[in-house]
Length: 137
Image 1 (spheres, rainbow, N blue to C red):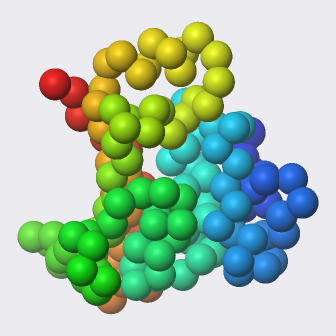
Image 2 (cartoon, rainbow, N blue to C red):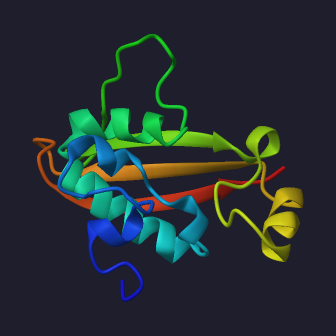
């Protein structure tokens, strides 16, 4: 949280966190760890809006959301919260982060996919937390 104290710190240079469209300009080159990614995704989803808008934001970052049928409904968990998730194929696209360096090359060989999930309150208005999971073969 120290490296990314606010939404502006997560954006590419020249982007403005007060402009809604600029919130899509997450600077993945600055993301080195899962913690960095969670903090920035949380900060940007939080100011972007509720669960309904989260799918659009994840898609804009290159994540595959839903089945591609054009309409996405958040998943309701057993405790009534809403979850929005998106997948990233590491096998096809390479790691989403880090974008450079030795760690990137080593990560390319291990996990085959990454999933980002954002959990919202039951009404979809309040973002509660973000999780990131990796899948391997």
